[in-house]
Length: 597
Image 1 (cartoon, helix red, strand yellow):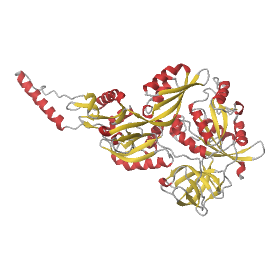
Image 2 (image 1 turned 45 degrees about the vertical axis):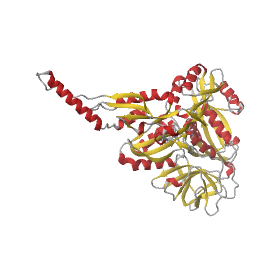
Image 3 (image 1 turned 30 degrees about the horizontal axis):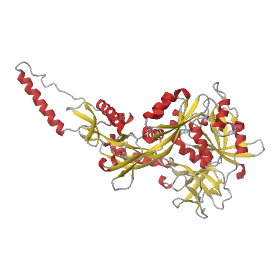
Image 4 (image 1 turned 180 degrees about the horizontal axis):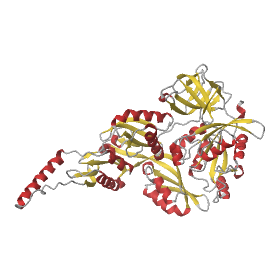
């Protein structure tokens, strides 16, 4: 097919604005999937996606559509995630497209991630088609959405298409707009073959399957391909498109989106964002418009059973293959044994990866407390990056510790403004300015330390605003702050799994909370065990594990009181000796319960 009859577009939106439902209707309208096999959330392949009602992985699909102009077009669609933690998935899809359908919920209006995704698409030079979805809802407010489209996103309201993914209203209008407004594939006249690797998958029978968008030339079975980032060569075994299942074709031509099966068996040899060309006539330069990503949140992952270490290593290798934003390296802990230090884009990303390890690879894991990357300057030394509290230099040698901040755009109803500002101040943040979106909603632009929003910020934002608040953020600059390393000591021995870097003002409250929690969880011991939170040599909080007491006088009948006292003194001496040489075994579920909280 002539590349001028091909269109590549993706659907971008805030979380839960109806992207996957709309893609279901597009598949149904173009007869790409037969009615009898079409399911709800058809492109969401993972159980986790269906359970949570969110998209985690972007899913490409090729559709054929006879347009009103008499031509039959090939349309490549990419459904993308909406949550801020998966913005990297969105950027990968945008790099492989020429246009984007920007979805806005008619009842919710423009939200934080709508703005962020619109800016991402504009930066990539994509044509944006605004679609106001869910117009069949009784609470739909079209006038407000049109106004926000012009005021917040600077897109003319007359360009908007009214649609409903649930009832099928406006589906044909969207397809016609994609054909009319989205330009045909770009860079098709480049003299050599170039394809962008935007995703990959590991198959235990066929090895690594590469997902690519061909920009110029063509690839077919039997060709010798070359990966431009590392010079890796391999023979192509099979090519095909997604309908949405993998369908073998003779070749992939300019403008096509599909998969490539090659001889590559090692997942680490494929790099997401790489340019694929042919070995016999390689391209001179790589494709532009693709950025490297840096993890923002780190935590340690350890197998519950130490003999599952190799199994966990293999699981992380597979997940790293089709999630370029996820990084890991080996580490060891005195309390937890051998494990891995893992980097994630955010807390939901971390949660999803952990759940996938448990479900898809059947490995039970423990995760340590999440932390961020700090910049530390010690006397007479260069500035170093620290993502694990254990690697922090001695407190006496530190000049300063700088922590990463984020610039957050928080969309909230007017009546919740006071409570949200209190939450921002509690998290050591500041509000730079406020913008009124309409009569009922405002947008706060705030600067917050990244480590303060890791655990409960989003949950509290949702509960204060009754689910109507939303947040998008981008990484800001590093700022020096009064940060200290807090150790938790059990019976005088520090436990590295519970070490954390906290602000000095919050250390005492957090230390007391952690000590109380551990005192509840650790089973009673034969002798008194102190649980202490310490900063350097200073104890800032303390609690005791419950002490088991054997009644040694139970069998002492009658006689003088000195007989009982003698037995009690003997018990006391035994406990003293036990405390000196005794060890406290912390059960694995104690780590899990404390780290969950």
